[in-house]
Amino acid sequence: MVTLLGIMDAVLQALADPSRRTVLEVLRGRSATAGELAAVLPIARPGVSRHLRVLREVGLVDVRQDAQRRIYSLRPEALVEVDEWLEPYRALWRNRLDALHTEIARGKKVRE
Image (cartoon, rainbow, N blue to C red; front, top):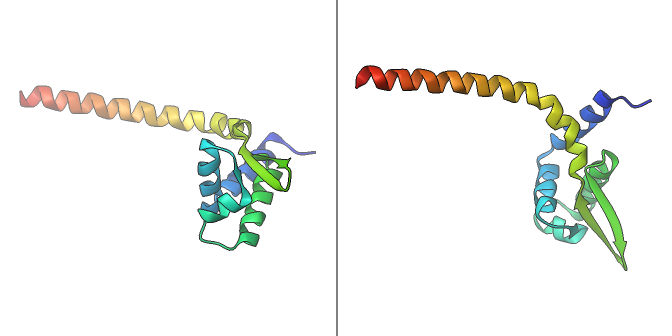
């Protein structure tokens, strides 16, 4: 049985690779073929295929057949669990940045 944390761990491991993040950046804006994705990566085509397989397996990309081509597209739903997990950390930083903003504002009042 795959747990939610297991899925999130797999997604985070997939995101750890810079080439995979580049693929996701491209797919964020549009669907693309493996050849189009290979053109933006400094690796050989078989390496691109391996990265695409990892991204498919963790649910970050979908693939559909279009005649002889495979078209890849982003599945942002797979990032929902990661986003939800990160929210308490974002809240922590927001609180700290709000406190910093308050201290800066106090400092400006003191100097005036």
